[in-house]
Length: 495
Ligand SMILES: NC(=O)C1=CN([C@@H]2O[C@H](COP(=O)(O)OP(=O)(O)OC[C@H]3O[C@@H](n4cnc5c(N)ncnc54)[C@H](O)[C@@H]3O)[C@@H](O)[C@H]2O)[C@@H](O)CC1
Ligand SMILES: [K+]
Image (cartoon, rainbow, N blue to C red; front, side, top):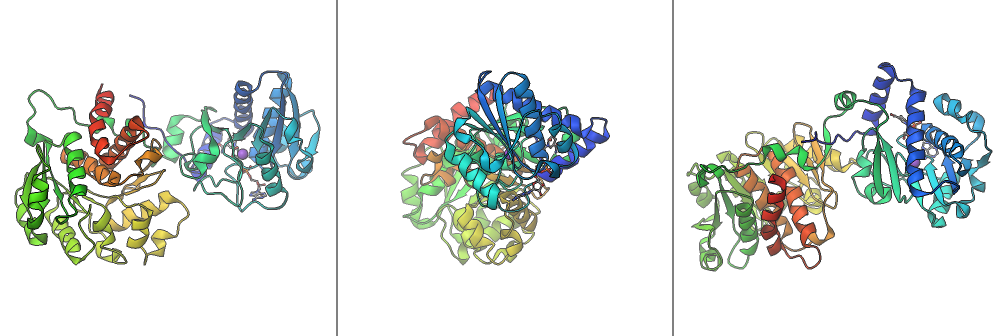
């Protein structure tokens, strides 16, 4: 099994770079390797003899561009280079490698985008420090308008490396070549969409250096959690595979709990019970077979049910209603110290009341699964949590504050643990944006926690399996399909 992919922030990458230099690789050598990797990548797009335009910026990203231009010219391409700023203002390694470039240095204003078979965007990388304006903005605008294929060096210029946000305007690249490790902007939206396909070039910075500098942020791929996924043996008993309890809403609001319950069963929870308010028992009973049913009247009812210690994982929220009763049920669940997933109404019931949840989840594995709206409502009185531009940072702060793993949904779902680890999910599909999809997700996560997966791994695995199931179905997906697709996904994972 390969090790989980490390994602490094620009600051961590800079430190890794310095560490590599300290270990004996000169900085200019790193730049030459980076530039050569760019040239190799360009060669896969345009055949020799083709016309390539390199647009270089004033920093080291521009330096990578100079190296690529030099190498490509040596390999027989017709290369032109346009620089933002004056050549004599280049400093450090960029100034050194610029001397190797024997061609003309044009002004960026004169760049002939339309004549190029490929444009290499080496304007800005991780050192972008403000919004693009003036000549830089104009150059990006023309580059995007040219319709020519664009290869971005490290990241598309104008994208913030750490947050993935657009700083005024950004290059829309078809392909991006980055170095040593992907950066958050390659996974977070909208940066991911601006990056096109992504290639990671090894420039000789070892994994030990990368994991010493980073090691807290990951792409959510199975390597991160597959070793924790249970594989039932011949002798395993259903009680060893946990018992998930899902609280249902009232008589007209029972579907959400059933979706969550079915997902928990499909992901392998040995037993699953729906806890139903007395008035909804008839409706719910008519729809359940393998899933069990118990009457549960509000917080007192939940307290009584949880006297059974075998119920080890709990879902609260889907269609439960936004009111004080839901908050009281959350309090009962927290007190009972079971693995817990809170979603939807269980989160919205704490609108503006997040301070009641400060440190609340420190004592038992808990996962909160808000979408942006729920997250913003919950923490509306906590600007320290809502203000960071980075979705990773927002999720991390909420995790630290509450003591729960926070899974902040979206096309770029982020899972953050109070211990500082975070993962970004990438296999989502727009088809998952369908009614009941979130109910299924929390059932999957609770079902995994019932089988003793730690909260972070359960949330990451749940998000990935949910997305994979959605992607396998594609158009026409409805939430009822998701749980039924889980066995196929599991089969492939456990093979
Ligand atoms: N860290 C590493 O391991 C390596 C980094 N390399 C390259 O170095 C890059 C980072 O280099 P730098 O830190 O020099 O940063 P950049 O080259 O991304 O940009 C910094 C320069 O742009 C200017 N600038 C920033 N924002 C601007 C704006 N909005 N408008 C106009 N000018 C602006 C700054 O004043 C500075 O001159 C990486 O993206 C990568 O391409 C590679 O050379 C290889 C190794
Ligand atoms: K760039």
